[in-house]
Length: 216
Image (cartoon, rainbow, N blue to C red; front, side, top):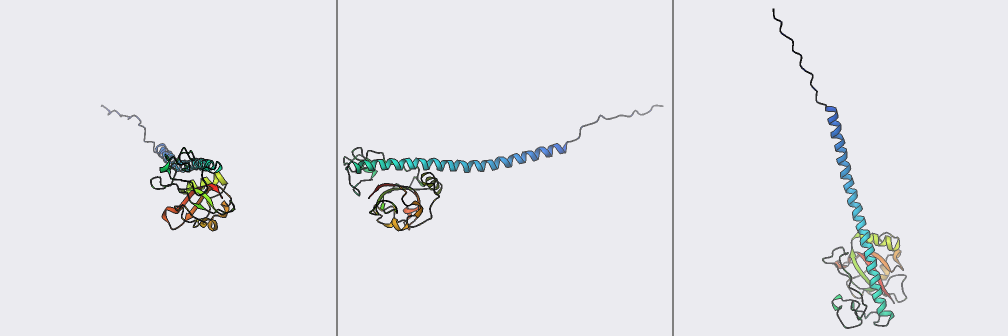
């Protein structure tokens, strides 16, 4: 009598759920770490950019002062009579700051401004506490971002951005003594730095890099 032969199936490997879940968990952790790292990298890059811009602005300010010093110290032009119009750079007049016959320097770029398409350099006069005796200084100012403003003060004066105040109309060639009463005390006597102006004139509102070009 024939007996049905018993068939024994070969053992098969089951699905390893545990290891797969472990790998998925590791990938999730890596993805979160990469996302967090990207945010930190972006913040770090932005701060480094602000520092670079601040250093460049400080150099531009020093260059502007060199040109004005040449005009004043060599008695080429008098205080209040310097022509800051970059469009007159080819003029033969010797009182033009950006002319070879005058200050002999190149007009500063606006690429470091908060809005390069609209912001321009202004050259108001006004009183700054702790400088001069006649309460009248010649300044160069450019609107910048808050981050750049903070870095300028950190590098030039070891200070944080000063409190907001109405510092007058920077777009006016003569700001008179409007600066004197409102100038941040932390920047008294500081020939270079950054201030926040909340003047009602739109063009004068915001954070401004400043360089004192001449003291009277």
